[in-house]
Image (cartoon, rainbow, N blue to C red; front, side, top):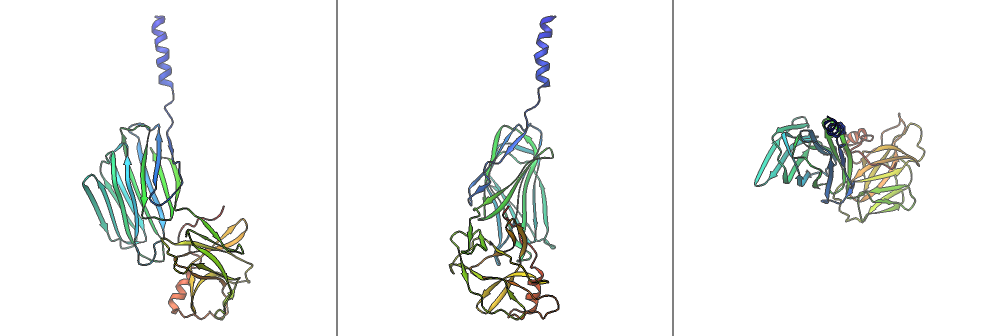
Length: 339
């Protein structure tokens, strides 16, 4: 009898022992274009509801198309009762392609209101998926495209392992990696692609991120149209033949503004001034304004006249100016500011 009790004690203690804690980690949060991403998993039980999502907000250059691809996605376990979800915002044409083995599945859509969402139910088997490719044409070229690719289902054959894939089509920007298990979020991290090397102007009042090989050169202010007030010196992004693989973030430090005025950044091309959408932000060192640029040139910080004064003339058609002014405080993407 005593022997039976002694054998039961370890068994009871074993049953009372806590299950291994679920752990999901993302070791690298800065990668180069096309470099592999690894998501390490441990403690996931079979039969848990698992979800892996990759998403981002991407600026697309005029006349170009968003290409967001997961390459050589290696899934070490199957997802039964699985689903692949694809969603986009600000798109007029969407194509999504998945390849596994010799089979390629294609989905195309033309969302009328710019919003696309598709949920495809399928068992997602373990193995290597050469690509999951999302291509989209922007509905509004001056607005970014939001895109999300998500896999989910019930885990089968789970083990302590890792999911690996590469992100292609995005040369510079941020992609969020989100993992949930049984509805609980275990990972929500952003990966920076291409680095964010910062270039400063000689006077330390202009900053450029996202374009390796660029230089900020200080220039002299030239006459502005009536009603526009120069707020410091202009800055040129050089060389003139600089190629932008994706938009870069230009940030200018704001001085004290005249009462009632509105700051904005203009691109000067010859005698033409183009208003750029901008976003005002507080840095620890003061107030700044940021905008996206997609070409080299001369950029100037100006302020509008106070209300009641005549609107400044411009060589651009009136509808273009009205649209540009309305967009001054609209953020085209989630800028990554200094802490």
